[in-house]
Length: 520
Image 1: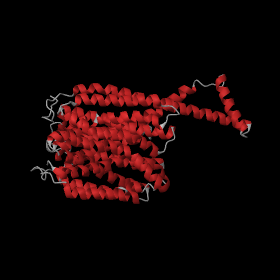
Image 2: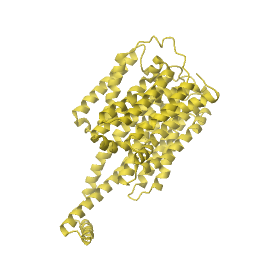
Image 3: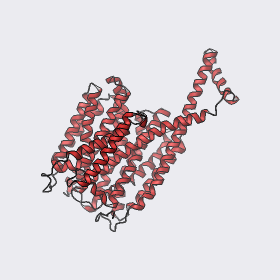
């Protein structure tokens, strides 16, 4: 239902606020895990479920949001999701045990995943076709800025209050969002068959089994040593069985809960797949940079988050400009390669500045280029994934698109974390192979350190032992620096290799989203 005047902009503010609530909570807890462990008496393995539960719930509910919105009524489902998310947030903050917190995080993730897809659908349907670029650009601001400011906001709250307040802060924001949604969001006219549709419980079960198991593998794989673990092998088998069964079921049933048939349109399919790759880069880079900044350079979570903000703001502010370019007839086929190329430039710039003395100022331009790249990726990909779709196909496509972007992020984090760990071991062994007690330069270094320690009062034997430990620490740090350089270079090469995929995009005449483009 197209809106006009002040109502359109109030709805816009409401849905962007709700989508940012969901996306901030994806990353805000990461900086509070250590405090949670101490306060709740939890192990690292147990507290990691606080992150995993939310991610698993998200990826399960996001593709189902279109079905649930159609079945329950979009307005009621949206408002209900805001209310449940807010209440679950309060109970997360009140939790006194780790598994109680995990349970409420799962509930929070279920409601949050619904907010993301339903918000985008409401926004797209509130704007006329000629303003869809602007609508998606405004939504994209929240998608890019949300995950970026999450760690900064979380770090500030934990440093000045306690971890409980990263959840309590959602109460006033969620309350305002619920009131705005109740006042301004209208119910979409429902199709005649919406209320009579039977619930495909088998399809729901296969979806939960497939994507839930897959997300669990991605969240816990590295911790469990991947396929050396019987648990990961079992979950992988369940994921494969569930996803294959789900796809077959959705293509055969007349009333699918997730209509995969929207992917028969070539540009929709290509846009959705490239969104997966963008998720890999968006969440993967947000994951890898803070680890480097905090573990190698010793920055606090707040300092690290502050470094990411200028680039995120630039990416957000680029959205309306990119939207105007699309409206003026510039094809996503030309904008997407620019986005991937800028992302590659960002990674190569990062690889070039990594040293033990890298300053905060050194990160400014690379992270600004990253934000610029995201600005040229999100909106064109969203345009492709919705091109020419109408009615209930819009929430179906946004659900699939958002799910794959989230899964892309999970794949990115899992792959980069594994590569980081394995490559560090490899680089340390490689560098260590050049150190020998028979090498005069090495022994001169050891003796120099030992002499300085002895001069401060340490006995000769202990000074020599400490010197070897210092040298080992220097070796580990150097191996880590080389590894982070490798990681950013590999990421850059990956994005350059993705650019030829735009050749599969079919050119559509006209500025607007005209008819869908079939794969056939």
